[in-house]
Structure formats: C-alpha cells, structure tokens
Length: 197
Image 1: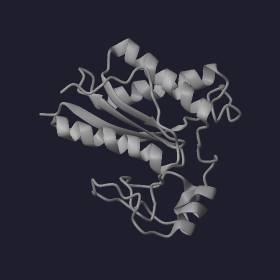
Image 2 (image 1 turned 135 degrees about the vertical axis):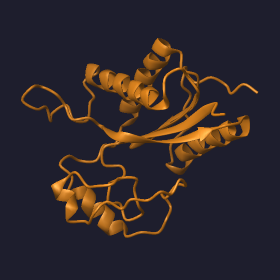
Image 3 (image 1 turned 120 degrees about the vertical axis):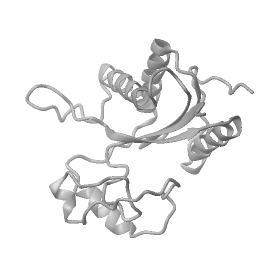
Image 4 (image 1 turned 90 degrees about the vertical axis):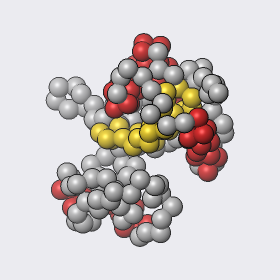
C-alpha cells in the first residue's frame, strides 16, 4: 500500500520534451523546439539525469525557448518554501523532506486525502502567489494583454510511490543529496516533519 510519495516538480526549461536523454512527453508543443527533433518518449522510471547525451544539443534547444529557463535565486527559493508552508498549513500535508533547487523541487510527502497531483498543484499555486506577492516572479515582465504571467512550473511532475519506511528514508536521503550535488547548503524548513518510525 502506498504510504507516501517522492514528488519532483520542475521549473520552465528544466527538462525539455525532446531531451536527448529521453522524456515522458508524447509531443513537442513549441514550434521553436521542433528543430531539435520529436519528443523522446521513454517509460524509464529511474533517473536519466546522469546518462551520457549530447549536452550541446540540449543547451541549444534551451536557447530556442520563448523565455529563459527559470533559475531560482536563494531569495526566490525562500518564497517558494513560504508558499509550500502555506499549502501545508491549509491542508495538513505531512512533508518529510523538501529540497528547493534552482530549477526543480523534491518533496517527500505522506499519503493524504488529496491525490498527489493535487498536492503538487497546491504547492505550485501557493509558491507562485508568494513569488508574485513579493515581486520576485521570474516572468513578472512577461505579462500578457490580460496581465497574466507565464507559469514558471512545468505542467507535469514526477512521482515515485513509496510503500514502506525504508523507501521513505531513501527518498529523503535522495532529496538531501541533490542539494549537496548542486553545491547548495542543507535546507531546514519549518513545515518538514521528522519521519515517524
């Protein structure tokens, strides 16, 4: 039985639908990206991040995006955390780990009455509101005619369902190691609870 999930939601430009390492996308929505090939659909459940690939091609594709890929600063990450904290306060999610990197977020969350997709949506919505309220939204200068800003979040997210305490512990460790690999200090958020044994 699923008791928790490792959730990964990414920022705009983090992993493109035609990434040479593969993606979970069925098609490429952007005409500008089509010159780099069709979607590279894969059913792999393991991380492809360290797989060998054509890095120059991947970077060239990112240059063709409509907006610059999002790279959250430290202060922006703090506001993302404040948004997640608000979502936790509103719905009582039990969060065992949260690592906010410049271009994606790892969260290990206990099973809740809400589906995990909804939990992710709640986190993204409150984080976006925090960024907008603080005047720190990366696309604040890209408003459309109605005043809306483009989303900094990719529509889909990655979920790994966890069925035991050992799986939760591994996911927590993985989230923390991502910070280390990125050269970032450990993060301590008030909404993160210790894993109960």
